Image (cartoon, rainbow, N blue to C red):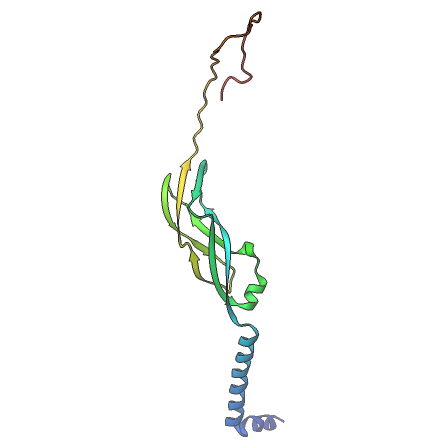
Length: 157
């Protein structure tokens, strides 16, 4: 029995090896035809990583056009929310910064281009100051009327 299997592999070995190689090449050809590499573009909003608390962040571009490349099966299985255009604001002080946009993608996809590649970001700190309310009366009341007192509902703003 064992000799029969060995003879099966030994007999016309080169022809069988060539047939195996041809089948492998044909398999790769068919698979690439079934799942070709394609390009696609999507516009995504800018998101921030490490944005400082108590600051208003404004950007020169609110959306980034991301051009992607990958197999058709990768495009079929992703959702738009999985593609992110990110600006890293970690350790950034108040003021204007010129930052590179980074794309976060699902596995199987690669970035071809980002438009714009760089975005100007203004970090404006929010400050809070408590001020007392002072009532200043101006003008005059009509004839026969008097103002007994003016009391604000809140004492500070």
